[in-house]
Amino acid sequence: MITTILWDVDGTLLDFLAAEKAAIRTLFAEFGFGECTDEAIARYSKINRRYWEKLENGELTKLEVLVGRFREFFETEGLDVTAAPAFNERYQVCLGDTIVFRDDSYEIVKSLRGRVKQYVVSNGTVLAQTKKLRLSGLGELMDGIFLSEELGAEKPNAAFFDQVFEAIEETDQKKILIVGDSLTSDIRGGNLAQIVTCWYNPNGQKADSTYRIDAQIQDLQEVIPLLSQSW
Image (tube, rainbow, N blue to C red):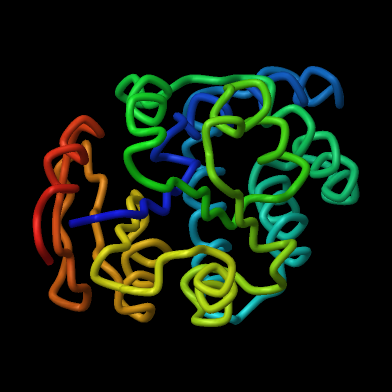
């Protein structure tokens, strides 16, 4: 049986795209960039995802990702690329202002409190994630919070999970479940750490055979019956 859940935040417990869209639109107005269309935000999201994958592969540092994505985005949109560092600083603050739960995630986490240990595992910045977890109320429901900036290692790297395992009480990897929407970060990380993986895949995307996916769900409520299974 599962005794410990490692929860991803962005795109899993919380709707990251909603927060991303709200923050970028707010900052476009603040920086005098004019209106930011849905099409422009979609272009940014693709750039952003590519940069984070490079971080997960160890090709870029966190700072190179945070500033570089906006620099490239601004260049494609014909905006002032020198504004990228300042824009990112404000973005980290604004990103936590919009809280949209996925699948009633707050009530799900709350209902599991005391039944299993629950921890946040996230590559998001300390500034943004701390604010999100505070305003959403999710932080106070968790038994612990592990952020890559504080650990000095990113998911999916073993160095990230080694520090998590050192801190939590559970030592049986077959009793630890990671739940996340990212194949490259959460599922790959779970594979490398040899724990049980649950891919949150609400849009029914296809995954190749590169990953060992122990469970695949489209609604977070589906996590609950997984906890009583033997893996």
